[in-house]
Each structure stands twice: as structure tokens, then as C-alpha cells.
Length: 162
Image 1 (cartoon, rainbow, N blue to C red):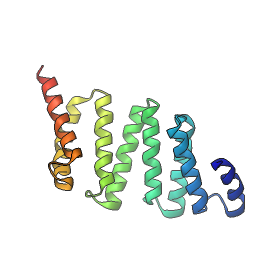
Image 2: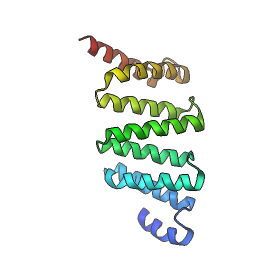
Image 3: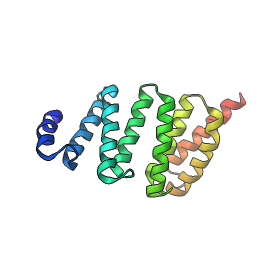
Image 4: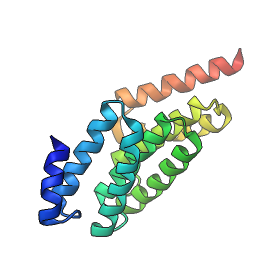
């Protein structure tokens, strides 16, 4: 249904029309959620370019689509490319929103989780310590996210001692 709406709207109002881009973004998200990550990835890349073209490289939707593309790359086993894209998006979020933005914290967490999946523990521990400190300030020491990071640090330290 979304594709049919896109096919009708795009020729009438243009492919870079805000509503057409939103429909395409929903379609890409539906593809990803449906497990069709291979088709979702190039669409997120095209959407990121379109949003950057129409609203600038740090347009919130351009950043969101680049972030989703990084998730797709990670799901496809492209860990190196995903990690680089997460880091690039993180820098642009920081430049646009500052370090106190929730998306910045979540991107930092995503990077840590990808490094963990790659078994890059020595790189992870200092990042986790910094993330824990920042989450404690942003959310408070008893917040679920802060506790999750503290528990992960403790598990990794215990595992490293074994």
C-alpha cells in the first residue's frame, strides 16, 4: 500500500516532497521490521541523501535515516561499515544537538553493543565507564539505562577476572 501511494504521489508532487519522503521512510521502516533488511538499507541510504539535499546534512530525518542504515548494516553482518557509520552519525548528532541529547547517548550505547558483539572488550570498558557517568547525569543513577550500563560493566569485569 505504501509503495502504491508513493508511486502515485511522487510524479505529482516530486520525489523530494516532504510527504513522499515520509511515505518512503515508513516503507523502509516496514521493510526493516519485516526482516527485509537488504531492501531497507539502500532505501535508508537514498532517504538520508534526499533529506540532506532538501534540509542539509544535519537535518534530523537525514540523521535518523543514516542511523537506520547503520542498524541495517549491522544486521547484515557489515560490522566495520556499521561501526563507522554509527560513529559518523554520532559526530553529526553531537554537532547538531550537543552531548546532552538522548540520541547521542543511544548512539554511544549502540557503538558499545556493536563492539561487544565483535568481542572488542578492551575498547568497550572505557567507553562504558564514560557512558555510565553521562547516563547517571542525564537520567539519574537509578534509571534503567544507567543501571543496565553499570551491570554490564560489572559482568565484563567479572568475566575478565575469570
